[in-house]
Length: 397
Image (cartoon, rainbow, N blue to C red):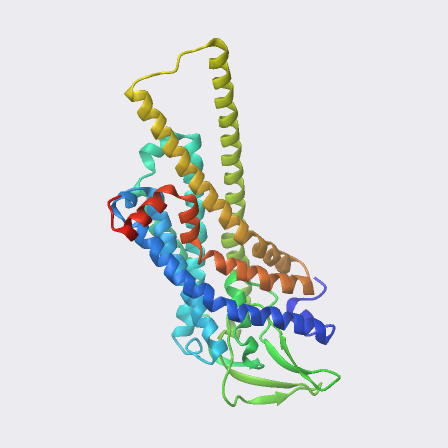
């Protein structure tokens, strides 16, 4: 690796590149609270709909209700970290720091793995429907969901003791939450303890340089201490929620582990299972068309009777449910895949300036997915839409 992220961020080639980066970051500062507030309302509505008696008996509704609750908490952690940008420093206090970091890890893990379980169940429903009828119920959904939560707590409990409050290098508050928000969607083993500096360019203008993309840290005090290094560059220090230096080697290890269990494995499983679902659906569609043609050629009579009608209606409902879950899963891939590709590239290879810019854009897309589940369910789910409209109009569903 020729250079890491920290070194690259200290070497902005010109003021224009730096200003472009800051423009993207400031746009994100304006967009994030809107995403969070929208997500709070949307996830609350989703939870309310999925817990209605006619839906909560379905295992997929249980998973999606749990995911809505997890997404709500995830956005709450994003919002608390974002508050530092508007001089509200709740995050930079002992206790809040550790809890917010822990829940940001935990809820991201829960949400992605609930999506994986849903997709695998959908594949089984298409491939082995007799198996699903016996095993995919609310009891098994409850067991699997609580198992995911328990595994997540066991995996990420380290964030409760390897983070603390300390003094860190910083610049003005336009970027104070930069590495915190970034780290929720991104981790890097190339992190250093130097995160923000004031740099002065040839025209005497102060440039803010983010030296670290991996620390879940935010920094800001009214009159923080400062120092001047051997190069004559002034660095300002402030109290911040940060990963403790004594655990730096452990942090590198957990970064790679977290990347595997929240990026590589889920994305690979989702991609493979969705491809299999699409393949089976296409093959089934072709087979149905062939059978219809054969019936037309040989003038075979259609089956009549109530049992045939019930079977046809049941098959239609199963297809609708399968299509709904497939589209929900594919939407997740669309919103998650870009940031994870950039994240993996920055973990393995030397990051470029283009990577930094793309990361800023794609992580905003990533956060957006946690806020729009309700709208996805409303568009794709006929049952969800019917129940929601019934709640609005106070009619029976």
